[in-house]
Image (tube, helix red, strand yellow):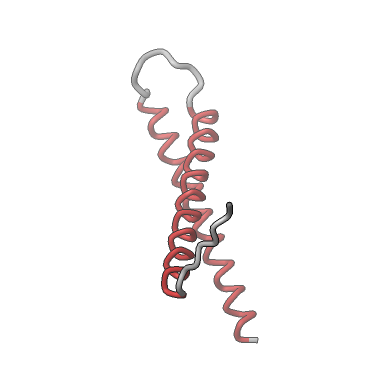
Length: 88
């Protein structure tokens, strides 16, 4: 027995927006996970206590900051290219 779910246009639109938001959130979470792993491998060389050494904390902050800066620049570049294509 298969029931067909019929949604009105407003509900379909709302559902599409929700899925897009959830997809964007998933991508952000994946990026955070990736940055955490990469920066951990780069900055944490020896776990000796339950706390980060000041040099490790500084390295992690700088590492994540560089990734975020690079990601923002890539987004800007893609938006600029898209705008150039749209106006051409």
